[in-house]
Image (cartoon, rainbow, N blue to C red; front, side):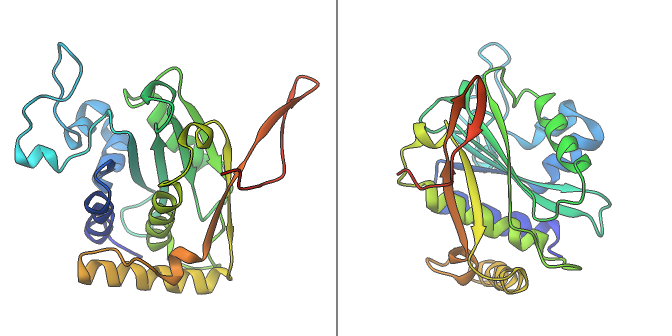
Length: 240
């Protein structure tokens, strides 16, 4: 299982590759869960209390911290005990729709029950990161192999794949539809590849352009439509 230091190191590589991507330190979510927003907000850029925007000019150390107004914000959530807990992925994407209508997407490779998902959602929706016009999507995510501890590397692989997949999409349509994630290999092979991706990225301090762990994940949009007043989900298709 990847520790906090490794997860923070590799996740920050996304910020280097794409400046519009902001990543919260793993300590943010665990602090939010245990101590609430007043303590957890220290992991974001300082805010001007009058304008409720980032303080300007930012100090160098603050530039490395995520903004509450980030267009794309990725939070790797750690729930459960400090050792032996579980990593999952939370992405807020405001591209094409604006921050007030941003969509939160939650990816979990180990769905045992609904309790963890509700904990994550409750922590976010009770914080200033959530706005009234935002939406929440719990994405059906490929599951890790039984008795596997690859949740951290898999969360990293999902984040990289999502960022690269969405780079050239119509973002307004992306954030008006649900998405579906499928796997082109088996769970054990995916977990092994994700561990290798994490090790390679941590050692080289950069993200590989191609990697089996990234290619193994397939994202598609799933359009919703109204039928007799009921929202139904159309067959998954890539509409872009």
